[in-house]
Image (cartoon, rainbow, N blue to C red; front, top):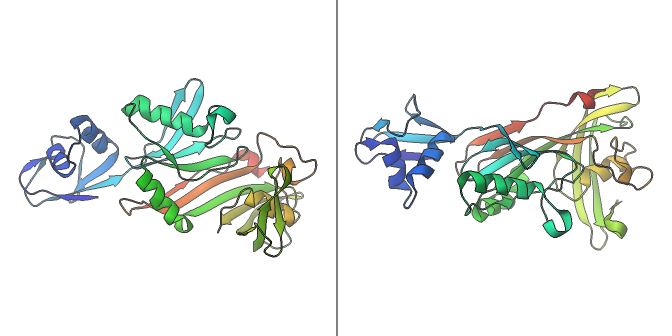
Length: 285
């Protein structure tokens, strides 16, 4: 995001000239949430002088913070005026009907925004993670940004870590099948297209093995419901803790599946962004 000064001014005056109707406080928050550059100089104050003809560039910066909301620890990995990347804990629904699900990650993030910036703040879910799954998740702060993400969702690189109860025969491979939701909202995998099914493609590679278990890195080429869980189960390597696609059909609050890395082009600034969580110690033993 670049702005060229048409006359001598201050940094905040330049931003206000390009954002009709923006308040001073909003412009100051824009500066706080970005790395602001003028040539090789980093600008930090709203009253920094800008000369006519100079170009100022605003680059989104990671504003990682933990916020406590009514006993819930919200971990924000990145925040700018267009989107947030949040670390979702296991055991909470990403988004949905609060009448059915109660508090969701979405409602916690929206509460954070409205407490911080005002009651008119909006939030839109870009994608979801299963309730039992932990990891990185993106929220948009406008419907336009949400639509840009969803139009280009195939260009977002999504990586997971999974600890499996068995070691795959091949060190790396691609699992391709057709998934269809059937009884009890459970997904069933078919080796060919059947009515109501959708193609699902999962790439994996083995990072580490220990005893009869393995740590896999997963890259999703499609994003179907329960895709990783059922695909790993179909090759005889169900995820640790995932009893829904393993033995007894029960669900648990936590399985060893982590959405640990996201790479994408910012839908507004076109900056290349990448976020990565550390490998939890529990995934390595």
